[in-house]
Every structure is written in C-alpha cells, then in structure tokens.
Length: 406
Image (cartoon, rainbow, N blue to C red):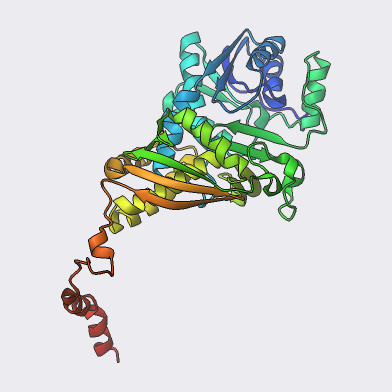
C-alpha cells in the first residue's frame, strides 16, 4: 500500500456505501489512516438489485460505521431521472442509455441531505481514479454544497482489489466477494453495467454467463411478442392498456424485452477521464422505451424541431455522462425538451423477437401525418399543381450559383 496524503481533517463523514470491497475498505481506512472520528454509511436502493440490503447494513456496522442508513429511492429514480432521460432519447455515443450515470446525481443529493442531517463536515465515496463516477459524485456534491469536503480514499490508497481483501481480512471484516469473481455489476431498473474478466478484452465476445437481464438468442421464444406503450406528453404511462407508474412499467418491460434477448450494448466507450474502455451493458426496458418514444416524436414533431432536438440530445447525454446533471446548460436543455413534449401523446406498438425490437405501428391525436395528404389514392388532397413553383424557388439559390460558377 502506498502512503496517501492525509486530507484536511474531517470529524464526521457520510460514505456512499454499496457493501462491496472498495466501500467496505473505506470505513476502516477513513478512521485508521485519515483520522475520521465517525463514519456514517448511506446505501441508496435504486431498485433492480437482488442484494440483501439488511445484510449490507449489518456489514457496514461490522466494518466500523456508527450509523448505517439504507433508503429506497427507486420510485424517485425512475420518475425524476430515468423517464426525463427517455424524453431526451439520451444515449451516450448513440449507444449507452446511462443507467449508472443517471443514478449518481440522486445518490449525491441524498448524501448531501444525510450530511446536513447528521452535521457531517465531509462526504466520501469509493470511486477509483480511472472511472467516471468520481467526476459525477465530486461535481454534483460541490454544486449542491460547496462547503462539504469530498473524500475519495480509493483514488489515493494505491491498493489493488486483492490488497483490499487482505486489508479487510486482517481487521476481521468478512469479505463475501471471492478473489476469482470474474465480473462486477451495477444494476438498477434502467439497466445493468457489467465489468471485469474477459470483457476487458475488446476482441473477445462477452460470455453468456455475464448477462443478468437478457436471454441468449438460443433461449428466446420462437414466437414474437407485441406490446403497446401509451405516452402522455412524452411520458410512458400505459403498457398494453394498463396504467402503470414509471418504476413498474420499466420493470415490466425489462422482463418482456429481456426474455426476447433485446437490450444488449457492447461498445468501446470514451470515459470522462480521457481513456477508452470496452463496456458491456443491458438495458432492455429503457432501450425499448427510447425506441418507442423516438418513433412517436417523429410523428408529432416538426422536422426542424426534431433536428434541433437531436443535436441537443447528444449534448444532454454528454452532460449527464460527465456528471453535469445540475449544470445550467442541462437545465436549459431540460426546458427545451419539456416544451417539445407537449404534443408527444399517443400509442406505439413494439414487436420483440430474437434480440430485436421493432416499431410496427403508431397513432397519436397530435400526429402530423395526414392520410389525405400522404396517400397516392383517389382520396388524395395534395395539390400537385403547387409543386413546380415550389421546386423553382427551392432550387433557385443553387441555380444562381451554377450560373455564376459554370
């Protein structure tokens, strides 16, 4: 272990705690090495994980925490973070629906609230120096309360995973994760991030045993499944005609889309810190909702609005991925997106089959598609006599340019 510099003295610290090796190591490290008097752990249940939260709480106390708080924020996460991102069709680098990134500002906000409640002078997390989460936590916390110190022991202690396990074992703290565990997961209702083992080789195909939410194609149904999603002002509100809250709808779609093998993402990703990594994700429900939502927008929004929104969607995704959920630019884009969603109401039919999710129908009371204008049949009301004059004016700038530049 290296000899990390001791940060300014913190008396009482609230630690974002998952129960894993890194955050478990943080508790004795903060107390023994950095002289923290009291460590309070906070575990936010975003939903979607099968972790025994009671056991996580007991482990925190056994590791030296004076208080171990577990709070369920799953409904808030789905309603206030995931569904707004769906309205934005937010996909980082056009692929990743950012299930992990969306959870970080909510955890950061809850950390700050608990710090205020307990009168803590610092908050801490177990993020390493290579990842994105350190940026997301640090930036969000500083925007929420600039006076709070932010401690990141894992960035400085210089210990490998194996050394962390030894560190805990020497202090009599139980370690439930074996040294040979090939994968680590960050799973919530918006998706699952899979890391470690053979996934770190970008040439290797991800093994089937790494997936938790999606079935292998060989195990998917041999018949397609059709579902209907109803949207109200850009928010998915019904599934097959039944009204559902965001969390329940997302979980139901995870099950449906996942059993048909839809929702896997395999990409080489640009991290905030400047390195490229191979990342594997599962997001069956969220990707299905974005597919349906984007299609409904194509029916209800004008072309110039769609084009402008598309460019802002990329900025939105970059901001969220980079920990700027609370930034002024993100807030301004939020206002634009909210305005565009006023007419995004209607129904979309999706067909799931053998890893695919296909839109096969859409309808909207605000749809800009007009049958009488679009049809080539006898009922067509489009006036072809207006076309020649339009074409002449439309092509006039190019025609003049060619005359000047023969």
